[in-house]
Image: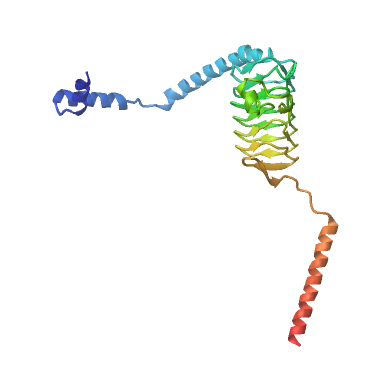
Length: 264
């Protein structure tokens, strides 16, 4: 069989050339696409697709997710995904929460009777985000969580090598709640580690590894994440400006005297 393939692929025989020609024609064959024909076809396909997605979301995906929720508000949308939820815990959602893609939620009930995930009003969470909840993760209102963000309040394994070798869970002190305050933007692939509080109005740049608290209205980036900018736009107090002008006048006067002295 290999000899036949090699013959058809490389031989100058008439049969081999004919087979290669037919193969090329088949691989490059295409039909014209006159708009009066293809536009209605495309519109019909898109309408059928939207109807299918609507039915899947309304009658399958959202009821499945809401069945896991202890509480959810108005306008909660989950997209056309069956989200992966492992373990038992409380999911508390505010109004108009949007899960814009498939997310993973893992509850580790060994650390608390009811691990709790809270998500505030008007918050959106992107595709392939992963939330590991040992005790508590709280996400505030009006937050934007980009795709592939990883938030965990427990590492899942103890830091002590002997405990890890014995397969023990982390110590209670290693499971620390995470708080994402209101109006925070987490960039794609950011990681938020146990015990971190991200302050209100802050931005965590894409790919950042956040291992310490982020002050409000701050931009952080890097591994580990560090402050790179402030989002506060408050003007400096008037007395600072006045002091600056006074210093400038004294410097000008001193400079003038120096020039006068040198001239004399």
